[in-house]
Length: 70
Image (cartoon, rainbow, N blue to C red; front, side, top):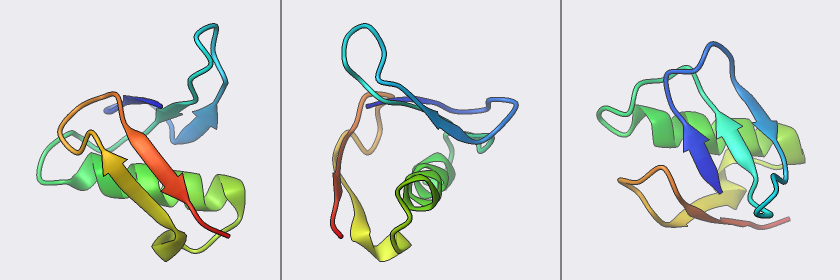
């Protein structure tokens, strides 16, 4: 998954040509704000609770691996 912080809107797009989902969020990549926005956007997109979305790898990177439980 690829994250684009400080975007003009929050949304989930994809997959792209490389097969990755792209998440755009308005939050800055400071103090875990962007990661929390990504979790919220994915939970809303997949209609699950925020507690069902976990960032497995890439906490400090734009490229992340995320687990979504139903």
